Image 1 (spheres, protein in one colour):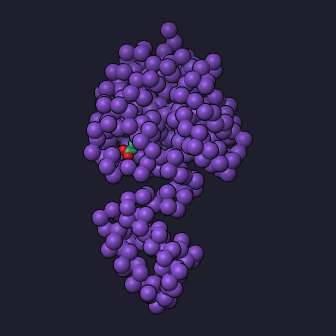
Image 2 (tube, protein in one colour):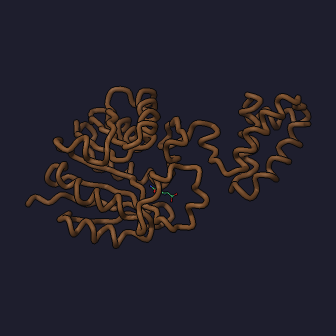
Image 3 (cartoon, helix red, strand yellow):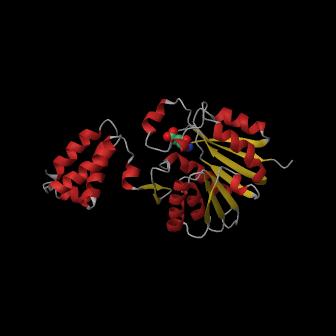
Length: 278
Ligand code: GLN
């Protein structure tokens, strides 16, 4: 089979599952033949041998079954870093860069703050902050040992020295410490949300948080206040329709200056609150 025919055929097969079927097909073929993308356009008449066709079929079949490109490739770009990802971690989303940006604006350039990232997954947020603010010590907590293995690897490769990964249930492994800033992208999808059918390859524990999607945020609103310095900020990602509920929850636990920020699509997605001085 010729390269151009293989791409056309694969593109057709990925149409239902991908928003960029041709790009996915090209990237998967490049990975299979271990060549840069330009090669596909320079040599459309090259033919694939049977062994290579089998190997292409293997990755194509996985993508056709809905496996995210990030899991097949084993990497995902976030905040200009190439992160290792595995099915044990959520695929980092571009929207989450809003949270990183807010965190970086909060931390003075030369500050040596203690920063906490709860539910770190692949370590995307913790590592982005650690890279932008080298003097800070970033602690990244996750309840999944498999996810932490990925986060540790990313920290070692991208931000060696100022990220520490700890296993545990939200604030439990750091309950005796005080942080200057706490960030989190917790699970916040409702258990009955139809969107989950498209997210079935990602860890459900990183996505779903009870019937109203607020179970994790409830715990964080209650517990983070005990480990944050007075005046310190707590920043949390949530669903576009949860801003009012999140603000109420935070208010119940005495948080002040509660402000919601929009993502690039104009949707309210990250809420910032402060620990009051009282
Ligand atoms: N933004 C993700 C999604 O809806 C959910 C991430 C999360 O629950 N933290 O696909």
